[in-house]
Amino acid sequence: MSLPLHIGFIMDGNGRWAQKRGVPRKMGHEAGAKALEKIIDRCRTLGIKCATFYAFSTENWSRPKEEVDALMSLFDRYINELHRKISSGEADVYKDVRIRFIGDLSVFSEERLERILALEKLTDRQTDGLCVNIAINYGGRNEIVSAVNRFIQENPGVPITEKELSLRLYTDGCPDPDLIIRTAGEMRLSNFLLWQSAYSEYYSSSVYWPDFTPKELDVALDAFSQRTRKFGNVAK
Ligand code: FPP
Image: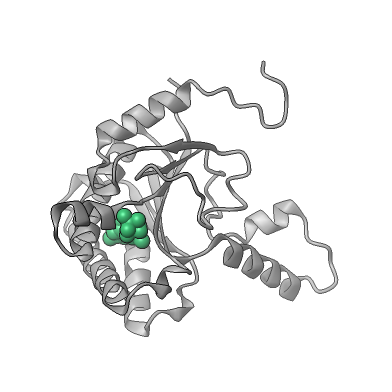
């Protein structure tokens, strides 16, 4: 079976999962964090090289304050927990896993940024296994514009190339995603990895993200292995 090197995940349906159970939306996000850990573990054991998870978009700030606060508090707890688990060597799930946070992180408090950097530093030598990118305050358009602006600043008056732009994206170091999975039956990109997904295969799973198990991932990977990728060429 041909496996993707890089998978992007649009973790959708936490709210509907909670609604179906008559519990607050934030419970859906909490359940989503548990599903995330199981999927990271499955990606790691399968030998996937990169997995990018869309956790909070540049547009998600427009959600009710209560939900945004609950998500930020969940991210803080998740970062602390990960730091504790990895530094104590307690959990196998993060063995050889490199964690990166991608997006415009400049909006976050110094305290949150420090915790993020400490976690990244703890895992930054684990370059042989799975690289996990957690996208927070991430937007594909914002990413492209900031890459272009960085290039202009570094090379005034020089026309930018596709290669130079790619080198300045948050996902630098990871190949373009071969597969993008979105849960909850939705079929939109929602500003996720716009540049990188030019030739990605898409897969829509009908289950809500908290119910997206490693088994569901295997089903998606099976579907992926049956796709014929042409990259603009004809089928060979
Ligand atoms: C979209 O579902 C989901 C989000 C905006 C948040 C994603 C966050 C997690 C999965 C939490 C775990 C992440 C980390 C890094 C700990 P939705 O709320 O829009 O669902 P709905 O469309 O059913 O309302």
